Image (cartoon, rainbow, N blue to C red; front, side):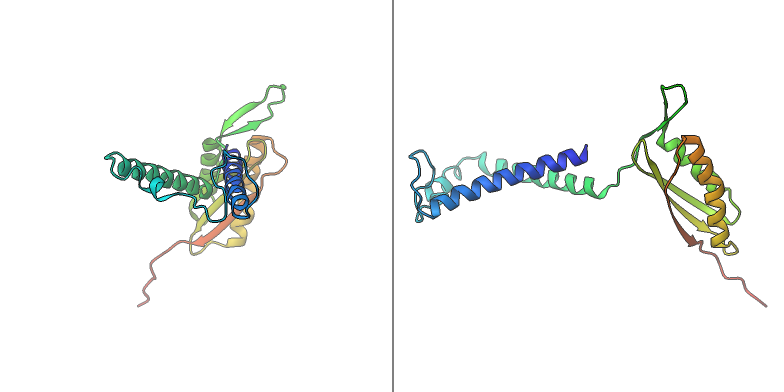
Length: 192
């Protein structure tokens, strides 16, 4: 839905800017314009002094202006946060072999992959987040390794065990996974 909203808002902003810019440009170049046109020549102003000061004495004017601007700021912040938030599939389509298919909750697959990754030897903690689309899922996995763990061996076991089981469970040919490894913090041992 977000790409549709993005395109709609960009298209609407583009149309408004092109029409407004075209109207100002046409008036500023001195083209012969129809009588209903709001601006008539290069010396004409966009808003006259009377238009700018018309509503200032009304008690509702400034609260309405502030509320309108606050709504615009909140909408802009919502759109910015929606851009930064990475979409993750709520469910994954699984081919059940009967032609109907099944749906697997995305959080269930995340939890299964997380618990299997966390049970690997040398892994202190794991985080999993699904990426991609319903029909072509992927995952981001973050592993916190114990000090004695081998990163290469842990990564090999993760791909051959946990990721392979997840890929088989959803019936996908491939399951792209981005893995981030970090060492778990630990206290230094004292030698006496």
